[in-house]
Length: 112
Length: 115
Image (cartoon, rainbow over all chains, first blue to last red; front, top):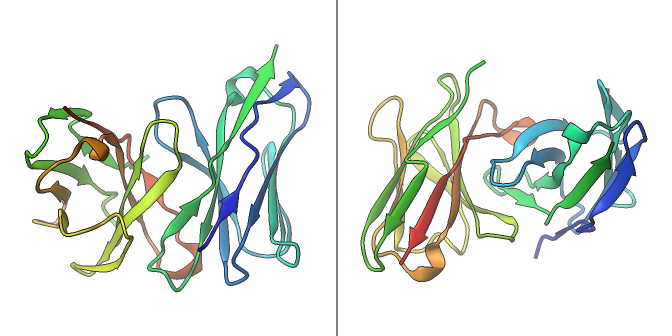
């Protein structure tokens, strides 16, 4: 059974701080990792993906991947109240028809 | 910016009735997906579709479910005889590439309520 685990939160950070969101996965065959943002009642919105060990930066967002530890994280710098949402980690297993397996999400609250 | 669209936004049906959920994927995408999310729970994969056939399906996607691409733009999910537990948000997604680097873009979803 392929599992993706996230702390459900809520994670509360003050405006302007760095928010750190974490995700672990169970299958070493995982190839690609995605972060989605989901506002309440809305659909998942792709933020970024990563497939190589190390860091990948896109604006205020940095994804970090450590395949040896089966760990992926998302850092949000200069957090804004509009970043308040649930952040979903998703893992793609190549041999499974591009099926994304999602974690339960971490709820982030950025306080002004 | 191109986006995935879905209709209807909300569907209410009686248990045992058939429903068809519709999606228009992004036009140059070749890979199509259905996911669902029961209120308060994880997003769950249902089925992936490529080259006019199912490439993968989950345990949820039983004989009550079917997918079709009836023309060059629409992608549909049919539930033949709805059950109460089918109540959920259903998301269509599409992607451009196969393999590990397929970014899947989600539509706004259809909220299905089975009474």
